[in-house]
Image (tube, rainbow, N blue to C red):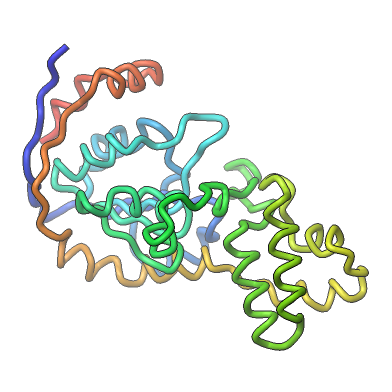
Amino acid sequence: MDHPSTSGHISRTDGPILVFLGPTLPLAEAQPVLDAVYLRPAAQGDIVLAAHAFRPLAMILIDGQFEDRPAVRHKEILWAMAQGITMIGTASMGALRAAELHEFGMIGVGLIYRWYRRWALAPDDAVAVQSAPAELGFLPLTDAMIDLQATFSRLMRDKLISPEDRRKLTQTARNMNFRDRILKAVLRKAGWADDASDRLIGGMFRQKQHDALAALQIAPRLIVSGPPPVDWTWRATNTFIRDLEAGGIDQTLLNSYS
């Protein structure tokens, strides 16, 4: 089957900013930072559907779904950029996709994005967390590995734990399933008594939140600057079309956007 292609990058000059946000940052903390339309974490097809629903100037991908629904596809992000929508990724699923698609013009923000750029084979579950449902605001129920690593580093710098403690805690957390990673559980599994671990829990540092806030703060400037010039052609593969159809999304949406 032959599908239309789009070459280059069309420039858009109006429309809202969309933000796909979930457990990384509470909505009440995000809204005062950036005037935008806030949507739930993105899954397969949501980029295409949101583009048609809102005709946005830009999208900021922070959180994404990956268990109950298939994860957001690289191809749909490329499709959005081919339509002139500035795509920014940070903190969680957004950092992953930005690192994977930076050479095509997706803009990444933050330490986590740079970490995935540098370590292409870094595990995806380093940013994964379990969260409550939408009705409870996607409240995070576990701690991301990347946040735990940042916390152990900070505790060591503050001389609250030793370098050996940091190494042991990091390895303990890595050996746990992401669904079980909670700082208190990591400390307990590594042999820390509850009274000692309670003193460290207040030192939790959330790198994902830090990166997400930074992206929201600088998004207007990034959107004005636009992505770096790139030369590529977007094409809809048969696999991508089948994925959309499996999700109940009409493939004609790919060709009817203007």
